[in-house]
Length: 323
Image (cartoon, rainbow, N blue to C red):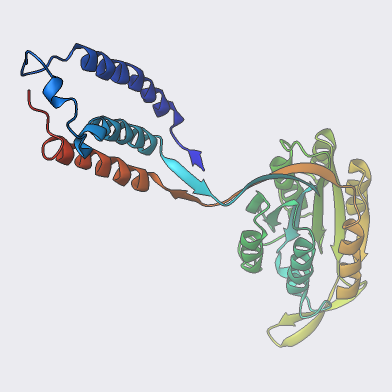
């Protein structure tokens, strides 16, 4: 049991003068009726009132004590646990431009990327993981969190067409860097997944990579798409469109930051890439788990009220003193 307001226990110090006053009053009290001799009462039997004459005061002390305990707000809890686990801080930066609708990965690139990313997230329960999406612009879909249920729900809602089209790789990388730059983790990683070339935005991908390097962030770049042409849904059905991926820039980003470049031409290759990234260095992080608190002050307040009412009842009925 813990107490929300333990400072109120200082009120128990008032019991010292209360008890002292009661003892002093007993010593100073005088009989209401004076007799020349008490010999006639020496053999009189002692009644229960003699033995209980201090009981009302005891009840008053108990009432005061339980009232103070109630003010301190006692609370019960199942467990408080601080554990040390292994983990890293990871930001997923996902391209959601219209080209991610190509169907060379099944069912299409965007869905395959989401499915594999979800499996990766489920496999790293102790990591702080966040999500950035980008096309012609970028934004944070989910900040770093260990609440992966929330992250997976937000990932599920990601789709092409959420934001202006085109591919701003530099913006997608820079937004992820801004989410990781203040992290205290020993290992900070960005997984940048795209299927195109940078054709939008004021921030060059290499510039964003230099910024990432400054903050000790490693970037793993993943190019998604077959080599040559890929099937793409069009107005007249499926069409074959050319695949244009700036592999040189993605390789340069990885090299600048100390990461690696990967090419995923199918769903199986994409899974293997995430499995390889999963073997990265881990760092210790402290996770504190809190259990639900239950307020218990009402129980002590009721006992205090009962003691107070019982004292009044006894003091003015069967244990009443004649002045």
